[in-house]
Length: 166
Image (cartoon, rainbow, N blue to C red; front, top):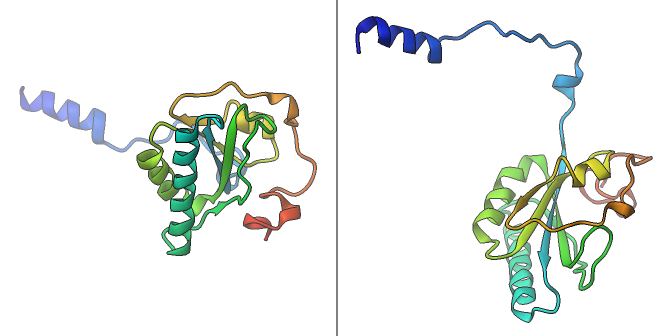
C-alpha cells in the first residue's frame, strides 16, 4: 500500500466530518427512555424451568440487596398467562441508569429462559412490539390487552409508587 492509499483510508475512516443532518427541534435531545421492563418467561408446567426462573429472581433480589444494581423485581410471579404474556413470567423494572448492568446480568445468567426487554413510555403497544428486544427465543404475545396510548403520567405504575413515580 502506498502512502497516498493509506492517507485516503485514514481520511475516509478517521477524519471528522461536518454533520449532514441538523437538529430541528429539542425532541432529539430531550426525549429519552427513562425506564425499562425485563419480562422473564418460563413454562409454568415445567418444574425445572420454573425453578431456574425463580433461582434467577432470587439472585436478582440478592444483588439488589447488596447494591449491585437498582432494579425493582415485582414480588408477584405469574404462574399463568397474564396480559400479553403467554406463559409464566415475572417482571423486573429497571431505570436507564442501571440498564447496561441489568442487561449484562440477564444476558450472562438467563440460561435457557427467554426474556422480553422493552421501554416504558406512553405507548405500551409500540413498546411491546417494535421497540422490544428478546434474549433467547421470542414468544408470540397477545397484544389485545395493550393500549395504543396510555392516558396519565409516565412511569412505572404510578399507583404502585415504584420507579420514577415513587
